[in-house]
Length: 624
Image (cartoon, rainbow, N blue to C red; front, top):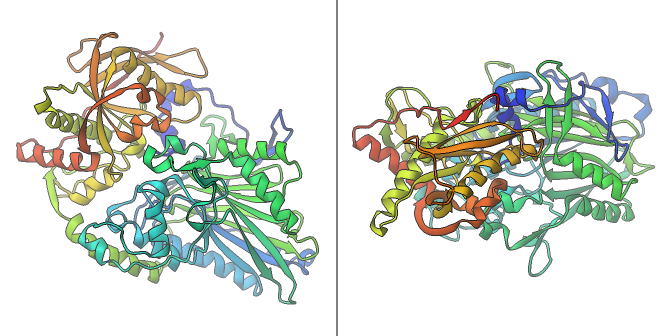
């Protein structure tokens, strides 16, 4: 469900070799030909730079030191870790809320030592919750909200996953309200407390009232005081990607209208300037991509954020947007577009943004050229034993683990061998992974069972790669737990059985490569069918499907009608698969999470322990 191209690109060397990627070298400038806007890309390392040089500068002795610490896309990652990629550099086992909290505290302490009267803002750019591991998801992500409170995050914006269970449910956990429906016993007993987080969102309005929902604010103004009593106001504007109809289900996005990002920023930038606020920060759940060419080592920055900022500069060349915190694409980014600093801190606490500078009380803006932006990895205890785990967040995580353990640790099945199945972070070169194919096998089996009494045969299964959130963990004794299965399929989407002609199936399989051409990098996983594809001499669709056939090897008939099980997200055109909207729904087959767990149980009970599927559903044919 996410724009997560960096992880996909890292795992797809063959496709990348065929896709021509242009890049600029690290720390060099480029200009957009249409706007003459300079774009500069930077690469950070794990070493935090010495800050005393700028903090003691006589040039800024009358100004107010300020620091912004930012994160994005935490996704309930209380303990989850992964590989943090900074260009071609990998930091293994990075992340987790516990380590993140310590790194943020250290960064703020370092700033405060040099600037006793400085001020720090901690901000987030959306997707703090949703698609979460079991210890957060089973408690409706309330432990994650409490972890954010313990980390002193005060201002944030909405991401698409804040809508996963309806925006009303996110608002409930934000303010600490009681559950509006019955969940599991652990969630019902969890202490429901306000997170203290203020949400700013300027481009989401209720479709009926045209008002910002739940009394969220389109912008916030915070006043920073100097030691001598002088004050400077800082403005914060919140933005959500307008691609929401492709990112969540109809019932979750349809109550709202999503206003053009650049136009919303321009509107509130002007309003803030009229109020005398010239130091302006945007918190935006919009993606950015940083690509490093494997051969030349050159690096470039592109993606929706760059497009949005370029449009903003066209609308208002004199805008005062100084700092833009991005999210959604789960990548590292540190660049400048025009005078705007742009940062993004990967995913799941694997990194954090650290921006320092000065506010000028005379101009009421950032002092000229004073902003210094960095993104740093959150290293594991093994890589950086000098940083100790944060005690407050550790207690929150431990409590969540204890409350969910009776559910999470339930054994539901067994694997053939004691080895984890690969997930989307380890896709093969054709965008297949073992867990994803297993999910499709489960959905096909579940749909056939659910429709057996209807005399309706389900032929194939398809699901979106982003909907399979993790690889399937297998314990040393070969057991598979409830928690491991839930981590794979956390969304709880309804499975729909639809009728599609063979031609429609070709069209939707080709749609994923049109998505590649459009820069979205969304893909499908399948069961019951396989296909051949080859290079296509068309930049808008770099590959094309040449042959689709069933597991029996027989080609599908373009004019025949087949039954395909998909999730409700895809049925609504999610992940840019608009072709599914034309498919006629003929049945339902349960909830994806439940179907996956039942499949594991049934296979184990039948004496067929779970084995890694062979990754042979997609076959690249060269030379055509």
